[in-house]
Image 1 (spheres, rainbow, N blue to C red):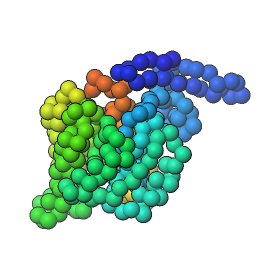
Image 2: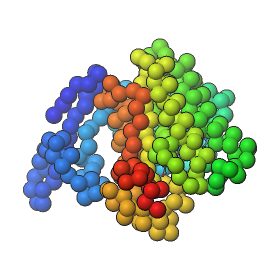
Image 3: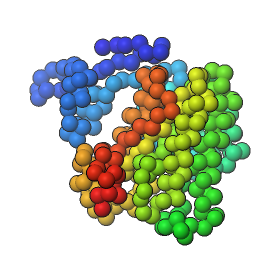
Image 4: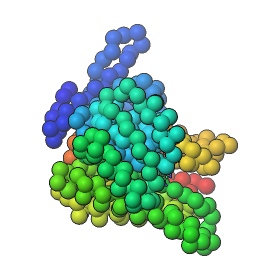
Length: 307
Ligand SMILES: NC(=O)c1ccc[n+]([C@@H]2O[C@H](COP(=O)([O-])OP(=O)(O)OC[C@H]3O[C@@H](n4cnc5c(N)ncnc54)[C@H](OP(=O)(O)O)[C@@H]3O)[C@@H](O)[C@H]2O)c1
């Protein structure tokens, strides 16, 4: 089935391979009836709504690994040209090599997300490489401090705010001024379920993730109608950033409490993120999409409640 949405083809390519039988198309309703936990990676790939981003250009901060790399892969697979950015060029080169051969072109640019001058140079690099900038994914974040917010020092506070909160605004302002104000676009801010709940240890980081949610709404209001701004709030995802939360059997323990019985993979977030920046979401702005395996519906709210 092919539908037109905002000039962009959105094809529902739901397919299911029956044992030994030919591939069959199934409706999106059938897809929803399938348990997400029971889908293989291959089945998942062929069962999601196919979103095309041909002719578009995207910039993903923190694009060298984890959720950012998964988002860059989904965008490039969908046909978008993608510039990935992070601090370390060696990590970016390795990521770009992984993305080689996909539908969209991939470029890289090393920049610290909390440095406005480097941000400006990066936005300029994306526009000079692709001639446009339709999508900005503000994904890079930092968490230099673990412990009670009663003990966090001012230096740590400021570093976290500079990248996770001010960075989101600075990159969005730059994208707006350089391209989006005149030509439109979509911004995705990667927040966290931590921005919606109280947790021990990562309280200050979570405050910045809550700020990212409010900033998303404010930006969506101020950048409308030409630019849509949405946030995604991942639960626990298996990346190096969150290693301390899932290694040593902790991930399995959390998975056993979660309604969907597994912790997240970066591509769980990337598929939802691709939807939010695509024309398939053309009437969605200022929204926060929670993608957490059901953690936030646990009685009492969130993973912390299950401890
Ligand atoms: N994993 C989870 O469970 C989880 C849950 C909720 C929300 N999130 C959010 O998801 C986003 C991505 O996290 P992740 O788990 O995918 O982490 P990750 O695998 O550690 O990747 C982080 C990426 O950000 C880059 N980065 C880190 N600090 C940066 C800075 N100051 N400037 C520019 N780039 C920087 C890293 O590359 P360099 O080291 O080269 O800079 C890397 O590309 C973050 O916003 C995080 O808060 C993650």
